Amino acid sequence: MSEAERLMARVESLMTRLEGVLGPPAQDLDWAQARALRWQRGEGRRGALRALPYVSAVRLEDLRCVDRQKQALDRNTRQFLAGFPANHALLWGPRGTGKSSLVKALIHEYAGLGLCFVEVEHEALVDLFPIFETLHGRPERFVYCDDLSFEPHDPSCRALKAALDGSLGSAPENVLVYATSNRRHLVPERMEDNLAGHREDGELHSSEAVEERISLSERFGLWLAFHPLRQEEYLEIVSHWIGRLGVSEGDPSAMRGEALRWALAHGSRSGRSAFQFARDLVGQERLRRQEPESL
Image (tube, rainbow, N blue to C red):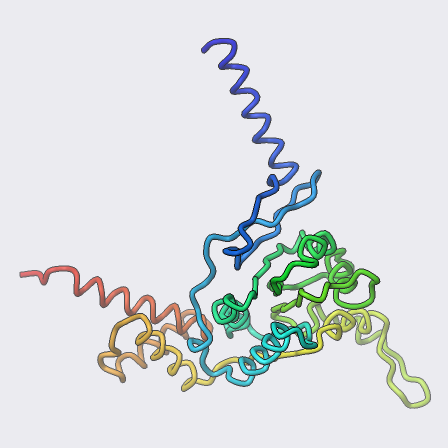
């Protein structure tokens, strides 16, 4: 290897290491096509929005047994797109019950009306105000969503509280926060927090720790609770996905038994579990059709 080649190799190695520290270079976005974005950041340079090549293909009609939640969030989103007042929304409940899927389905439903999805990793929440600066004034309407959970003194939690309400520089008019969480109040509930409460003149006063815990969730104007599925609801979702993926159910009683055993083995009778079972069942059926029968 010549001296020039060795020098170029060292420069390329140095640039690779620098990008890991500084974060990604800025990207020129095609705003006419960008409907899903992710904020990426480094330690030494302001982050940048980068376009995601695809979004989950789930659609509103695929979401079953969450009609009340679907109608409420869809109405709130249509208000937002029309330029009318709308609320930040907190979708909370057990894992796999359709919270994130509902938000993603809205992107497919309303991308033609200018709705855009922005994904921000937990550690990048401290960049919310630079993100808002980037989005402010654009004609598109942006929904930010993530699976949120915080420790009580997490700086990301404070940044989100300030962005939602309580700061001079809150979210711009064209940005809503749709947050999903397994916790109603987004931060852990500890026994000692409740024990620190006190009675005064016969009234119960919560401790400051409890007040701090609920102060983030109350900044969301729309709360949507998701609950575990009943058995028949789970089986209804299984049946929907089997048909959606292009295979008939075959023997319904056998399918029911297999679906229930799948849920038991996975410890979850949820929409996610129903979708995973349907994918496995349909994949096996299509593979059998493709392979020649053994003699």
